Amino acid sequence: MKGIILAGGSATRLRPCTKVTSKQLLPVYNRPMIYYPLNTLIQAGIKDILIIVAPERAGDFLNLLGSGSEFGVRFTYEIQDKPRGLSDAFIVGENFIGSDDVTMILGDNIFEDNLAEEIKSFKIGGKIFAKKVSDPQRFGVVQFDKDNKAIKIEEKPEKWISDYAITGLYVYDNRVIEAAKKVKPSKRGEIEITDLHNYYLGLGELEVAMVKGEWLDAGTFDSLLEAQILAKEKLQDKLII
Image 1 (tube, rainbow, N blue to C red):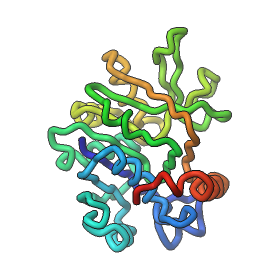
Image 2 (image 1 turned 180 degrees about the horizontal axis):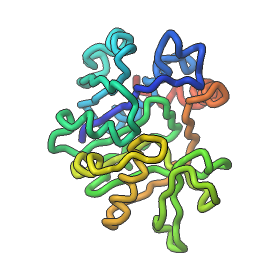
Image 3 (image 1 turned 90 degrees about the vertical axis):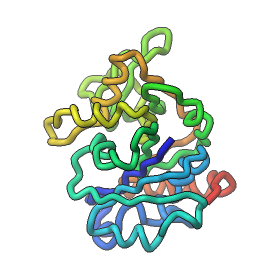
């Protein structure tokens, strides 16, 4: 299993802070934000991790993280010249992934749960992680039937279909590379990861795991503040880096 952290983008919602550094390098209590998704991957025993960064911030990540030896892992870095959507990470990372399976986590996603066993138990197809939220219209959401089987996935639906948001943690088998190459850009010009979920859903090979503890997408000042509180009050004794 390989790991990817997607840490590109311009993070305009966090300006002016992100005029001088990447969002994923902002402090969340006593650690840079990227340490939290790194912790999720390292807890799952993933040793080879690709970090995808924007060109103007590449040096900042190298200065902070280096080769990965400090954490007992190996880092590879790739530049994403222009944000093209989350699915693009599997195209950018094609050579890195090789013939392996891959777990990708977004660089601004922070989980209270230790999800190591859910990642380690992956066998084939795709696995996504869902969390019940009060504002599902902000996210990609998954709809279940009466037997709690996923039947529909939609990105930021205009009409309510479910309260279960899809978090920024995804596990896929090696077929994800070719599937990503076939995704057509959405109306906003991005190749959406929802299309990859639906690819595996159509094959009957998509598993949905539930996130029980807190989950934060720290991409706004309000959610960044929530992340600070979560990190201070609940995460300090759960982190291995």
